[in-house]
Length: 199
Figure 1 (cartoon, rainbow, N blue to C red):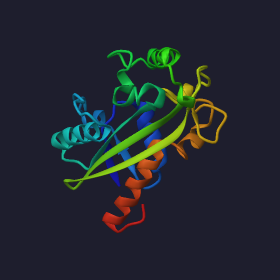
Figure 2: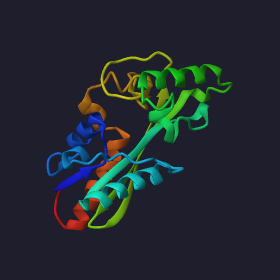
Figure 3: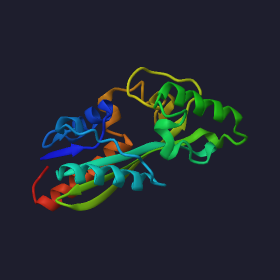
């Protein structure tokens, strides 16, 4: 099955392709000569995922999906949340974003055990109908970044049951537990149900 993933993030595209393989061919908007950029004006991850998926559907009329994902830190009242990519400014510089999270945690009066989670919401448009899927990965923040793998906030996030950050574990291991994996697995199951085929 061919789907267009509304992202310009090569890390996300690679991760989703690996999780959905085999059975799926993923294209990016740039593969279709489209930019895929749209202002994310939603107040929730679900709204932002829907905005991106609808924008792509309106441009290409191809089966497509978009995700909105982010880090929610309890001691920061759920921040950075929907602002995860731009937490330290519009440049989407995750080194600066990580530093801002750690600086704000230093100031936080209640560390709440450094509890945090990654959340992913996927909006799928298949043959014009919309579907939504949600995945979370619980864990905690470490004040000392570690590891060179993954992307985004992975160097400061330790998943529940682990003593290493997401940036320290293998890509295969990350892809078997991640918030995006959980949401994509739901999407795969729903597409199997809709089409009556084993995907």
